[in-house]
Image 1 (cartoon, rainbow, N blue to C red):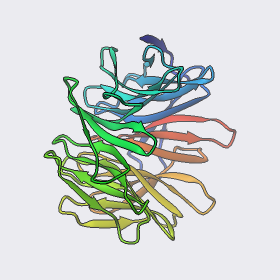
Image 2: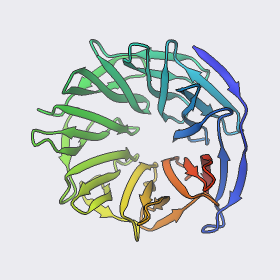
Image 3: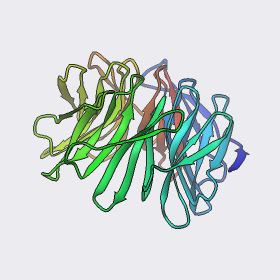
Image 4: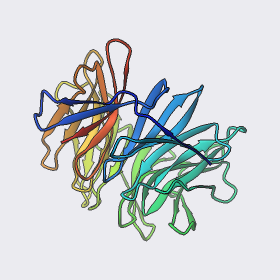
Length: 324
């Protein structure tokens, strides 16, 4: 295990012009060419990856601004994907044979790598007590898995699907994701704790991509149709509501918190990326890091804090934390 402390390169706090209560903290990993957050914990800790020395490394930014870089032993590329309330991080890494493996990093820095039996590659995508992700048995044979805290791995597959990809899990072990059916179209699914699957698609969808699931089972994500990409919210009773940010050419939710607030990214006609929130009542607000030329939203926590990336006209940019 490689572990090292890095200084924060350039922290700035701004007041949002669109919402006076919002502040933005920007940061980059020292010496990195890119800094990409992928998840934000309950206390505001941010996990993600950065590019440095021609490869990708994992990082954890603590609420006090301290950044810790990490890589599982043997990694040539590390990509964290999720963080829980205890600052446990999950993700995947590649070794020199270009095989992907799953990893779990606890708050004390201990990294455990894992692979389901006979897996040709392993990617961990989410954690909430249990860890979920995908594994491959070979070309066109991709399964889902869930791994308990004790390390027990259960594999599962949507019936007759070639690809089953879990993307999110909530506190009662309900899993959301997508699968590739016989029609070669990607459909959304919900997997109950007892293993029962329910398939779903917004009307007219040619590709359904769930991204997050709330405590009560509300799911968000996006879907494609002939007109482009749209956001959706699926209520616990199965009711589907589609939505678009006003003026957007594409709307793509990326996360939902326990209370049902959705965060995501949309494209305008230029096209330029901007962040957005959608409240549980359906009210949509947009945001941008001040003085940025583009802003994307990757994650939101239960306090309403969001993280993602931004760019500036000078070719600069980095990561941000939005605090409501």
